[in-house]
Image (tube, rainbow, N blue to C red; front, top):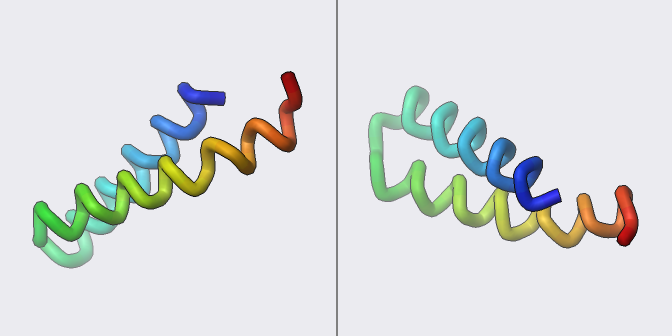
Amino acid sequence: MLVGAGLIALVVGGLTYLSTGNTAGAVLAGMTAGGVSAPVLHKIVGP
């Protein structure tokens, strides 16, 4: 689950950087996506 959240964060951050060229915005978007996806993946996969 944590690996999946990290992968989602990397993809979102990378795509954000490629579309905007703003490093700080890309890091923020990646961290937000990873933080939001971790509990969702935990509910989907289960303990």
